[in-house]
Each structure stands twice: as C-alpha cells, then as structure tokens.
Length: 580
Image 1 (cartoon, rainbow, N blue to C red):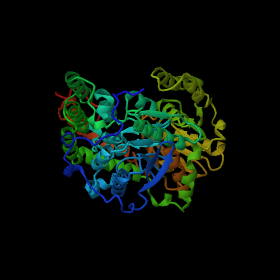
Image 2: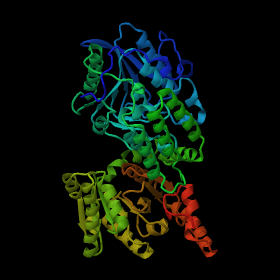
Image 3: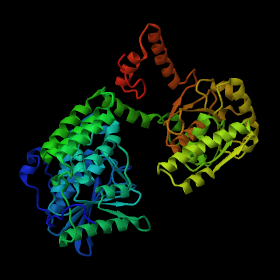
Image 4: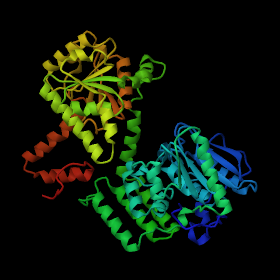
C-alpha cells in the first residue's frame, strides 16, 4: 500500500519558487547528441503499456558516479524527456550493483565539483515530466542512493543493500540526500540511517518508506526487477499508482517533535560535548532539521554549506586518507597479478575451509568466531579439557547474545556451532589448510607448538602465530618449513576489530603472504603487511603514546586531564568526564 497521498500521474514540473533557481542547479546537454562513451547505456524497450527508456550506469566495478557518468546520466534523462515516444524512464546499474556512490578520487582532483555536479543530476531526474523509477540490485550506496531518491519511485531486489555511509568519511550526503531522506522516512529514521552509515536491507527500507516495492529473489531476477519498475511507470500513467517527487513532500513530524528528536540525537552522538570527530554526524542532524522546517531549496543550501565546511575539516581529510590507505595496503609488488604471490592470492579465499586454532582464551575464541562467521570448519585445540570447555562456553555465549538481540536465529547458531570441533591434541590438525596459534606470549611455548605443527600438519598448510611482540623468525626456526610460517596478529576482541597485522619473517614466502592476505580479506578484516620487529606497527605506536601518558602521570597530571584531550582528538575511550 502507498504511504503517501496520490499525486497526479502527469508529474508536472516543480514550481519555480519551490526549488533552487535553475541557473544554480541546471546543466543543459544537447539531448540529441551521441551518448558520451559507454558511461550510461541508453536503450528503448516496449513494455505492455508503454515504451520506456532504460538508463544503465556502466562504470565497473561499482558504477562510481564519475564526471563522465554524471554527464551521460543527465544527457540520458534529458533525451528521454524530449522524446515524445518515451513514456517513462528506468535507471539501473550494470554488473553487480546499482551504484557505489561518488568517485572519491575526484574529491582531491576537484572533478567532483565540475559540472554537472551530482545535485544537478538528481534534480534533473526528479524534474523529468515523465515517471522515473530506480531499479536497485546489489549496492546503492551514498550518491548512488541519492540518485535513486531523485527518482519518483524505487523498486529493490531482495538481497540489495541501501546506505548513506558518508559519515564514515567525515562528510554528509551532499546531493540532496539529507533533504530527501527525511521527507521519505521521517526525521528519526533519517538521522539513524545517516549518522550510523549502516546498510539497510530492502524489507527495512520498504517499511520505512524509502523503497516502494521489494522484488523477491529467484530466477530471472533482473528481468522481474525491470518489469516491476515498468509496472510502476504504467500505474502512474493510468493513475492507479502514485509517484512522488520527494523534494515536494513534507516531513510527517511536528516542529516540536523535530526539535526534540534532533536535540536527543545530538546528545547521544556527542555526550561529552567535545565533538571528538563527531562533526559530520552533528552536521547531519542540522541538515535534517532544515529539511523538516524549511522549503527544499533552503534546506539544500544548508546541506551544501555544511558539506563544504566538512570537506576541508581535519577529520574528513583524515578519514578519506584512511579510506584510500585501507584499500592500498595490499597493493605490493610481490602480490601483483602474474606473480607467484598473485596466483596464490587468487586461490587464498578457499583457505577458510578447514582451520585450526590453538588456544581457547579470549583471543583464541575471537579468532574461532571470525572463521566460523565466514563458513569455515574450525578445530579448537587446548592443552587441558577444563580450559577447552570454558573457551567453548564463551564462544557459545557470544552467539546466544546474537540470538537474543535478533541478529541470528537459533537454527543458524546451531549450524555455526556444528562446524566447531574440539581436541586436546595438535595431531588432530593434520587436515587443516591453515592453523592460527593464539596462546600466551612465551617464546619457548610457541616454539614447542610450532615444532609439533611441523610434524602434524600437511605440506603447504599455513602456520600462523597471533603473537603481538615476539620474533617471527625465532618461531619459524622451530620448524623445517619457515616459508610457511607467518604472523597473523589479530586485535582484541578478534571477532570485532577489523585490523590484522600480517607479519612477514625473513623466510616467509610470497605465496604464504598472499594466501594469508586473501584469507584475511575473506574474514572481512583489513590486513596490513608489516615487517618483523619488536611490537610490529600497532604495538610500537601504542607503546609510544602509552609511555608519554605514564610520564605525564609521574609529573603530577590527573588521569582525566590526559584522557580529555585524547578523547577530543577522536579516541573513543577514556574517562567520560575529562575535566579534572
């Protein structure tokens, strides 16, 4: 059922005084010109009641909204609008998804601000005189979802993911997203979605009012998704379905409710009042408040002012650096395509099939969960049965919590734990593709374990140590195959923290490095290849600033006086009341 009052099917153009003046948001491209390369594929297709123009975004791998894509999409919608034989428009993505959003690399080059900018494109889609429907499969992220919100309706395939994750880059949705989303789903939902950056499934998005129809999974999904979009167009043409220009909707909450909701959200997001990297989340709250209390054109001006300020902030610059750094950490020569390491990396994901973990303590349990969560069969080994049973109980307790919170069904928990085997003997790891040792930091103990693994494990098995400080080479020398030995240093709690240090020893082979890198990626972790030295990288940094904190304590500073500035800098932990 429709969530909003029906609109006229003809979708007349928006009144001039309700929108940003056209010279500010319009870029005209000759709609009769040839399409600019393959960036957007323009095809005409006749459905039972109407001929429809299909605009397919083609910019693999994620259909990023580069300047070329923006130009071609704008040209395509103008061409369809000018063609009297076209009755409606469907916007879809080629390949695995709808669109992963803006091309982040254009931020540094300035191309993101070259015409046509994304707000212009979204407004052009919305201003089209003919029904425009987004057909979403795979990911619709950031600017990709803003493009979909610029359309008059959205249909999504089961399994699709919708999100506005800009807050993770220290910015906010800047193509009208902060103005359209509250009008579609309400202030509370809009703040939650944008300040968390969390992904939405189609069912949740439909319940909120963001998606108009969910197309069930099954055979010929792409075709059924197009048919659902075309049906929306046909319904608009015959008056049986309502299509909405989201910028013309009003938020359902009263002004008093909006004020209270925004104030409460800010209090939760920034309880200490010290900002501490929360600038973009707080700015999102201000933009949503503008959407709820001001006309679209004025709210859009607020959004544009805020994103300009955020884009040059130290927080955003740092987060964007981190974004590229996390994606560049494994771009190293020995893992390049065509090399032995590159070939090993291509096969590495299969190494999550049978995995051994030695040590059932806090770290070992977290590592077990990490592998179980990606479908591996795991054998957990301990020296004593009491410690083993205690470790298994701790693992089960974490899954019980997930069931209680609705993150997992009891049936799924049973299936996951059914892949966990236990043993008191290293000999039972003989069939494992990889083994991760996670016992306490004692060199003699670790050397003894690796000597036993050398005898028990099959040729080619990865022998990984979770040591945080000890010499990888000294551990590897306890075996006859040091090329298979590598550090795989998880951070606690291992099932939550994303970082894994992949520590190369002097004799670690490039194939071993590549296979562990691929395995880490399969775990949905960020694997960073580092050298073998005391503390590697993470703990060397930790030791430096922990030493300085200790010196300040010795010089007479109270702990809150140290924690306060660190929290202001953006560290999430410390005394919640930093004033001494």
